[in-house]
Image (cartoon, rainbow, N blue to C red):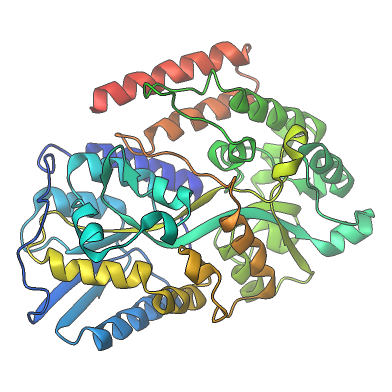
Length: 443
């Protein structure tokens, strides 16, 4: 699916913290509307490209065929900012069912009561969540003891590499460990004066999807301790990731040189993406990039693989960062039983999930859909299905103030990579303290 830049997604996640007390409070534990009555639901979603909207509408058509009493009015291109405004205001203009690309906002959607508690519906339907979805998917669709969302479609992050460039550099296979990755990045880098003819990998945190959260997943981090306090200074995964990233920046020519080169890159979502143009030979990205390279008709053979892992975690190779689209029911909706029928269909009906995944070229979120022989995806897509199934794949946890803690961590990353942090340990301790302060203020 087409995504916003990682930075934009994090900014939106922080903005959701503005959801005010108008949404605060417990949503009803049940619903009284008749799900068999003739009813029209309003479904807000973020997809906007014509092929994406067509896919959503096709899924809605299939739902309406199975539920002839329910009509769904799908409204595309809805941002989380608009969602929070509508749910705060309530009234007839608010949606019944909402999907969002930003899993970071689940904590706020749940804790504020903006999204209804789905547990009563799940229990009544007899759905075993653990047998239906992978643990990371369940983690990013709940907050504390409240489940207010379910996974719609999933994303898995991996490594894209230019096979032609690999052959020219004499690299036989994608790297499996970070030491192998560094070696490959250096071999693939072709300097050109104070710039590059080709860069093996762009390691700076403004490099599109190369965010701290996406990278540190390969170290299997713990973001919060048992008391809910930030663990970014205590868990060695974070210091290890930041150390590796800064060292690679130095090996590839330094921060200033890399930043000058990055300024020549095209838009993340356009045909002039630096991986498409051959400006970088390796790229961290989600499964959607595979379809985009095909659409852009890149002039080289594209390979995909899991991201490398730390050398001392080589046995965990194959894991990666998981995210995805979430879906929930507005707590203000007077049609929650009917809304649940739509949510249940889109998230747990295997054929519905498979059809939707095929049309949007996304990773299915359920175990059964992942194993379905009806998946009609590029054979290379299996890499992302395997990442989604890997038992050590992980995600970022929900927080009461959405993704604000990730924004704070990323801001620290910007300072560290630029050489503005003298003491990594002390810097992480200050970052952890800021995260804790922000969370306390949001409660």
